[in-house]
Image (tube, rainbow, N blue to C red; front, side, top):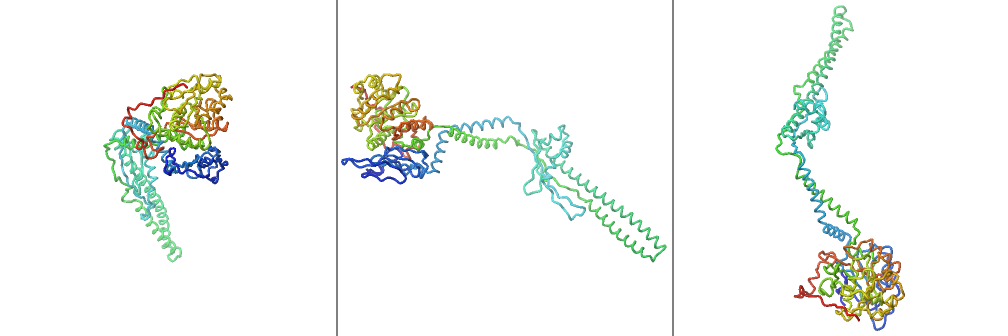
Length: 628
């Protein structure tokens, strides 16, 4: 067998074992079974999963609390079944970054209409809100602020504090001046609600904006606040100059009075005592006072500049032609971004709240067993009113090939464990266990295996419906009335190797009936006369029937539906099986959407499957039941 042989989806058959394989580091394997001389040697089934702390036994089951399987390369499974090793194809081994991105993109793709709906709703609400708003016009005036003298000398100049000037424009004093210029009946504080002031970057220019439903009022308002600011600032400068001039005049007056007194004293001394030393001192004081008075007079002149410009309007307010608010383009762009963010957030929130299985890796991790087959979605594989065998109705379909893959895996498990009796069950009803049992039975029979199907679901039996049979008499009659099982066994005409034991008449105590020793003896008898015994049971969680049968079976095949099965249900079912030490040999994942590329890679099955010319008109082979 070559290394490229087919295995379960996502796996390839690596090699057959001709000698027992040695234990793998870090795993605990049971003693290898003795191999008859006339058969090829094989090793116990085992998972190859690095650093995960699993306890792996010869049963092929995987036990341990560390079921996350995050050690080593994510998803790098290898499962040895008998004399072949199933290895995950390298192309399907996910890497943390790429697999997460693919999962996120697949999630958004699956719920893209929710994102579209959220974006549309936010945009529609934004447009409706914008249309209901009153259009507002905005006019802007630009004022260049000039620096002021720091003192009475023209050599000291302070740059304007533009933040202070911006605050000044929005003050009550400026608003009162603007109101007078506008001759408005509104209160000054009401005018301030329509005003906004900013500083142009890296300049000394104030940008004064005024908004109003009327464009003319917006223009006049911006201009009025600009004029009011300049007039207020000019008045402040004038007041400062006047105050400075008055102070200088007071100082000049004081020194002039003192100079007059000194001059009188000098005249008196010149008349009475011209040689007095005091006269010399007084003349010196008089000269100093004259100098001080001259300096103060110059300061008074400097404090009254010829140009009192404190700023100027470099951009007069213009009449706005288009409303500035609402800005439909900006609002729609914001709505698009907000709607997209809300839509994506809602998708991920719903995903977090969604308890459904995420696919093959999720099921393998929670079940601690490999997925033996992925059954693609088909219109007829599970119907509430009519059960159809896809393996007979459409033998060239992807679903039929998937059941053949399951057949191969089950045969290897049976060879490895010397197992014949397999319980096929699920966590809840409607996940495809009966369809799996029927189609797997047909696939095994087509391979020449003597296969017995047992309808062990005594509450809502459906297995007989796939073969157009009746449920009564059957299993309950064998257990209660000690009837010969072969006397009530049905034989589908489609295969000589397939037999069906129906459920029988409804009983009030199905769980207790299945616990009888007669059930153990029946399975033992069927094991001796069949290559495979497939028992279809009730779901695990609602009733105890499946747990009872799981303890009697050689292995359990767990069936899940990718659309309806939940993580919590799978975990609950696993706990039920652990209570009776049942061995889960593998799982079947039903109802996969093969339109995507997440499960079957880049190649569609239809490219390789034979396509009969009369496929559309082909009828399903007959499978009438014959009572033995």
